[in-house]
Length: 175
Image 1 (cartoon, rainbow, N blue to C red):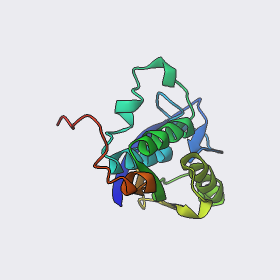
Image 2: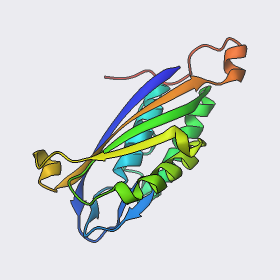
Image 3: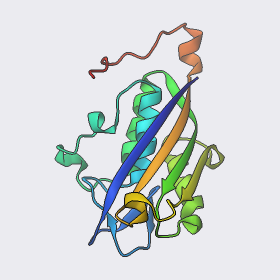
Image 4: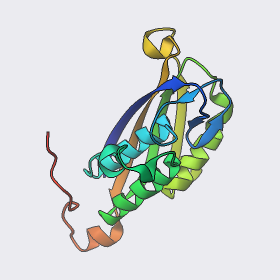
């Protein structure tokens, strides 16, 4: 078993929908980013890729590539999951925290869990999303943006472990 941790942050901007966990959340502003700027799903992608030592979301889906302009981050999570599976692992669960002063997210969390789970090929009960505020502190408290954290557990797939496979083949990290 391996664990990965992800973090992402995006600032608010006008004229875009707010998408969190693959769910469009009613709010006066959306988040600024190359894709749909789903800060929660980006954190999950980074945690998933990190657990398999496959780098991060920017390495696989760079914001300099127009193919990813406006793309649903759930598509990026599906592809991240495929990369992890090709490396001989499968996701087990994800635990996430969204840090936002506004809007209130509790009514949307069950759908976020379901959409993230579906993109990762998991049962809905294997994904947990929590929301918190910063009690008015920092950029989140000033309502300038949203942050998200995610932890993902992966395990070696039975086919790989029964053959005695080593670690995933990937490029080494470069500082």
